[in-house]
Image (cartoon, rainbow, N blue to C red):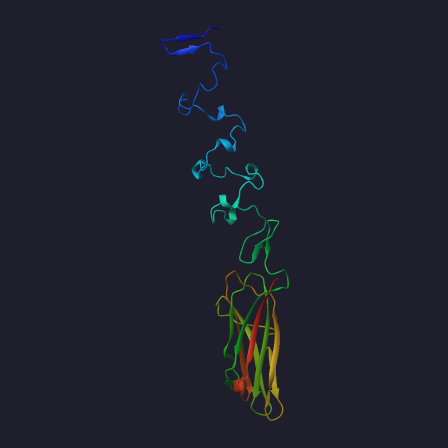
Length: 258
């Protein structure tokens, strides 16, 4: 077919594919929006064809960049803004939380080394003298440990080393440790349904150190709840002194991973 130029319509017909010399069609010759997706061959646009900083966030559709679009090691650290990648964007298994860590296989695992490990230790030291002479239970001044567990489902080991003095012959006293959860006002005895331990003098008074180890097996609480442990005393008969003459007591609670 011969090449025909129609002056009336400004149309050129009969031009074969490839009939224009190289370099004839420049970007000024192309109409606006003339190059559509259909006109671009697959894999035709390579990195060398994209100007530096040409692809901005507004050019990327939501959820358009998935794992299949990014080769291994393609994105260097300098290409990612600080705090740009959140936990929700990570391809992980398990549940992220205050008591977990992200392992090398992209799974969230319990922190603290597993079942039976000590997650945290809380302690209090007291040396002030405390005298009491009633059969009603009362709190020993300052002998309370408030704590917020690092995770749910933990158990708690309780260590108490105290100095006790019974003033008279044939006198008896009880000590107990109690627990409260989330400030609910309900205090529960630890170790038994009653005194954690008992001291009795048979001679003219009794003085000595008393130690006790108790285990609070997985109390019911929620994440963020505060738990309190406290020491109480009663003098079943006579009087009792705790930490007399500056004898120091130590109160320790350890959180144990389930």
